[in-house]
Amino acid sequence: MPIYEQAYRRYEARAPLRPLRFWPITREALRLILAKRVFIFLLLGAWIPFVVRVVQIYVVTRFPEANRVLPVDGRLFGEFLNQQIVFTVFLSIFGGAGLIANDLRTGAILAYLSRPLTRRDYVLGKLGVLMGLNLAVTLVPSLLLYLIGLALAPELFVKWELVWIGPAVVFQSFLIALSVSLLALAVSALSRSARVAGLGFVGLFIGLEIVRGVLVNIADRPEAHVLSLQNDLRVVGNLIFGITEHGVPVPPVYPPVVLVLVALGCLAVLRARVRAVEIVT
Amino acid sequence: MTDVGSPLVEFQDLTVSYGLVQALSGVSGAFPAGPTGLLGPNGAGKTTLLKTLLGFLAPDRGRMTAFGLDPTTQPLEVRRRIGYMPETDCHIGEMTAASFVAFAGELSGLPRDEAISRAHEVLYYVGLGEARYRRVDTYSTGMKQRVKLAQALVHDPDLLLLDEPTNGLDPQGREAMLTLIADVAGRRQMSLILCSHLLRDVERVCETVIVMNQGQVAAAGTIADLTGPKRAVYDLRVKGDPAAFLTDLKDKGCEWREGEDGYRVFLADGHGPELIFTTARECGVQVRHLRPGAESLEDVFLRALGEGTQA
Image (tube, rainbow over all chains, first blue to last red):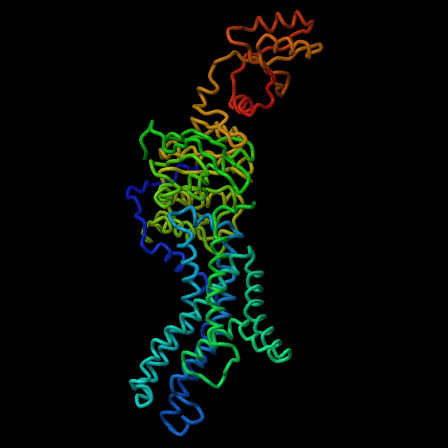
């Protein structure tokens, strides 16, 4: 039978413009990422520190003297979130490297941008994927941990002076997720290969951490602390959660400023690279 | 469906540049409802015109409207009513054709259930019904072209933009694709712009044509008007030195170009074949073959491009 004998139905209703146009992009990309078994294992692995912290809270409730060795207070959440940064980096490498790079390689970017979508919708959709993944290993376990703390050890957490923990956890989780996600997305937009983008992201995040370590410990350059984005996020977390043990010999305003500059740089890259038409001048 | 007669897309004095390179230089014209061909050699500005229509490029000067809307200021409203099949690859490799086309429908604003249902229908329509659960990156070139058409059709656009739809297809695949496009334009009454450098593709599907060259509209109108019997055309072969004969014909107001087997002569207005015989006798050549011809789209195309024809 010739192909044109097949049915084709006109769609009489005019599809309206959606208010949340980015949502299908986020949903479909998450569906594709979560279909990979390796990724599920990575996500589960990222929850191991949560289990450890729950055990810590439980032990302190059973043996109050353990609180001297394993303090259970606001700092616990700061340290927990600092630990989770490394998982957000790995999730962003495996989940984020190809998000834009693959679309540039296969031309799928045209499939998006020739639709009633703005470039902002597209970036928001892709950012939503990484934000979702990263918040799943920062915000969700932190808040759950807080609730478990309130339930298991009300004498430790139900205090007026500790009411800041909830908002602090939300703020720091979003800061980590947004910083890492934006960087991963910008790096992905700079390449047509997910592999190259992944390596670039590793270079930026883990490479800078190594450079920081070398400069600080061998060349004795303390200002190099701001070079590492992981370290900048940790410093902000330490400031918020009052962790004073790991002091950094740079003015405390430097790390947040670096993070803001990096975020602006990422937005500039995305603005330049996410286009339906490549303009070479 | 759109009103027949009123142009869907109009552009006036449109100038579009890529940095320092001017791709369209003050072009004016209109795409009426129905199938229209956009012809021109590579680099003529065809794709730039389509990308301006989609709101990807903002004109430096001039104005374009589609369905009465300005694509520069209302790109979403315009894109909602357009289906675009780009020249280059355009797919999400990890998705099956069914998921990809449904996703495309959803991005165009269709409710999810409707998008899924239409994706299956459209994939059957383009002949990929049996292969719709296969990943798109495992498809052949011809199948990928069909998926591109399906994703452009899924939301039932008012205007379909097809940029070189037969690129990379073998003769059989090309024929099937053209049959499909002709069906979309004919039986489904969908307006479309077929952008191609292949004259036969355009002739097969379209009623009207715009010929572009070097960022300008070189010719526009219905194919019937452009190729109509305005002048007598003859295909001929001669024995002897043709140079003087052809120069003499040119002096008498005729045009000619080399054909597949001899020459194609466009006689000056008001003249008949006797002019050829008279000139041949004067120049001492024998006319060995003379056959009346009709001006083809290729003649119009070459004339518009100023190539091939000696006047």
